Image (tube, rainbow, N blue to C red):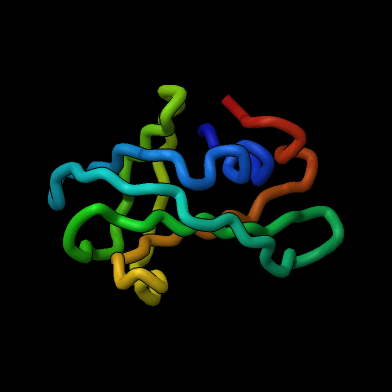
Length: 106
């Protein structure tokens, strides 16, 4: 399984992404934010990525997320509060071992 590191995500803030799921279809989004969370212990890290959608709100689902560089991640995305501009936002929350965030796992 591949997950993006917080550093990778931070480098992509503001960039366009392609997101899709069979039951929802596909749509564009921009990575709006990457925020550190509270890890469960010293061996783990927690971070969140917020994707501002180009279209209408969509439900929570497992989505295929394609980054601008072609990296592909399968992520559970959950609707959260709309952005300051009113655009719908989907959020991915990552809880992983700190040793896995030194680079992207592929």
